[in-house]
Length: 404
Image 1 (spheres, rainbow, N blue to C red):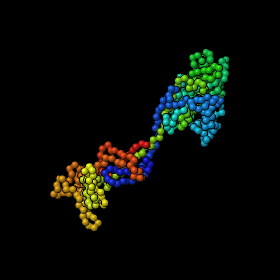
Image 2: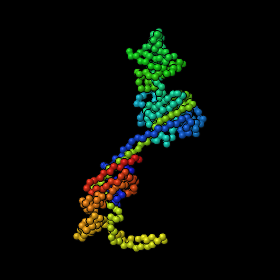
Image 3: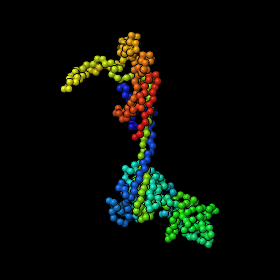
């Protein structure tokens, strides 16, 4: 549609060019929400394993793993010019805090392009599995939304001190009062501590005694990736969700996911200006007089008479005209009001109100507008909600909008 520079109002055999300054094309993003589950046939759940040739779907697991390693986890994750997908602008040393981490196995949800469009909308992905909800952080990470995750290093009950690390392996030393205040009580889920003189109150969501990993609803002084549990990555344009951590636990059993696909839609807006001297002559056969021309007639098998012109006739508008040679052509109508004193033609617009009581004397009404490209091919038709009178003393502006 970008090359459309003409418009045509179906009242006259002519085109008018639309200036580029009167054409506006604005892109905007449209989103559609999708929902799939573990029983959906539209998407695929594949397993990748570095050392297994067992088929996952139609492909060997080590082949899937090799493709993931080569394209997304190839060591160029922190190079903005060579990496695939989105990523934070920070570099983390620890494996638990890194955006891109691939061990020896992974699980992949592959969403076909027809359900993704131009890509999954950032921040719209949600995965529910085993009462746990995972979401994307708009930077290509799939994170556990339950809360902040820390690793308990030691707890000194007598000294009232606790030492723990975040996902970036940064160590923190805080004060607690185990008795009698019970600031750290696994049974009741209380986790209150004092850090740098400030008191922070939190609740324990889960605690693995063997590993010392504890999930807390919120620890305010942990910033960014420090307390976020990352289980994998999401590659928005490719429609791939890759689970690289806790592979055996995530996507086990029933699961549901929701996200929004992206489609760019272009809003076209055309300003059409009909000046006083344009598109105001009717092409109704009763408003045109045909003179001259040469033709032969024949009758077809159905009895219909047809004319074949060897020389096209000349069409004259019903009005009074003075030619360059001084001759006068008068094809005016005789007024229905007073045929003895008035003759009506297209040049008599100023007298229309006195000649025609309806006030529409020989003035066309615009009902349909056509848009043509540079090859004069009709590409769009606009229907007006009501006919608009084409006045000869004032310009008329139309605004055409449509989406592609």
